[in-house]
Amino acid sequence: MLVLLVWANRYFFGLYLKITKGTHFDEATSTRVPTVTIVVPLFNEGKSIYQTIESLVDLDYPRALLQVIVVDDCSTDDSYEWALRGQRDFDNVRVIRNPHNMGKRLGINHAVRVSTSEIVVSVDSDVLVDRNAVRELVKRFSHPQIAAVGGRVNVSNANENWLTRMQTVKYFFGYEYMKNLEKYFRSVMCLSGCLTAYRRSVLIELEPILENRVVFGVPIKYGEDRFLTRQIVKAGYQTVSTLDAVCFTKAPPTLAKYFAQQLRWRRSNIIDFFGGISHAWRLHPMVAIHYLSLSAMLLSYPVVIFYNLAQGSFWQLSVLHLMILSFMGAIYYFGTRSLARPLRVHPLYFLPMAFVMPVTYLLITPLALFTLDSSSWETRGATSSPKPDPIAKGSISHGPI
Image 1: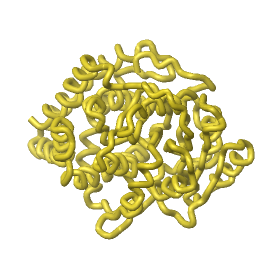
Image 2: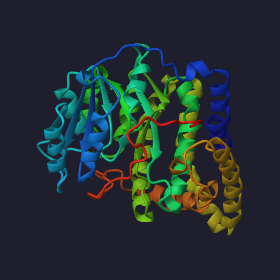
Image 3: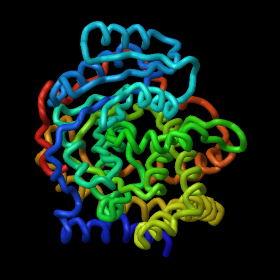
């Protein structure tokens, strides 16, 4: 029943609202062109931070109204030097450095205090941004209560191997379907730091809360994006997202990196759900039910998997997963036929999720529960190798995505 409830909300009721209430889903009615500061938190990204800077200064937005601030969190490689090169080469780029390793959120807060722009756009340091993205984000600030607007994240290395192909399909469903119910009620509970715009005034208002985030007395540095989004909603503001503002990130290409990412995200989910239970009643009832059912399933699903293993019925459970994923693969195939080849993959690559997902839930959820007080920066440990660029200095024809 719990699984059916989550599926109904994520895939059916949300889609029904999108089809029947389409104009309310993504209102791009603001004609203002506010000042914008793009904040890039940096830690050990090497040369790729320079490529990110290049993509940001080339955005289709008035240069006089656009500033890029790179905030280095005491990187231990040559990232800071590459960022300084970007500052020398582009007049609207500024590089600042934290006094010590502080984590992503405190680093962003540092940059927000330095900035004077009306809108602050958070962009991860390993991300490439479509030229029209900032324009599309600011169009969605159509009401004073809208405090944050998230964009769409695509995978830049989609066809690198089977694992990145699997994640490409997963990202598709994450943005096409899973947020629809929250989008309709303007209470999107997690906006990715890869590409999200905020009202600076709201970030300043919430700064005392964002500066003091601890678990069991230990300051934590993971799950900053989810925590910030929930605090914005808790404060009574609206959060929305759009598929028209696009960025590209590199998906983990190895199982070790993928599991590390999932551990980071699982800790974030657990902490967020525990923290949100006390005020979930403030949300719209439909969103509250969705939020609480997701939190319940997060903790109960590993128990179901363990029970099936103990009963010797794990393979039957996997067959059920395969059937569901095959259906979803067909949806993905028809939904992405018009996309360029680098942006889509064969839907059969989604089938390994039938085994990967149960394993991650069974192993990573308990590990996350017992390591909630981790204080690491949780970086993906990028090297200085160049990133693939699917954007090619132009606006993308998004098709149906």
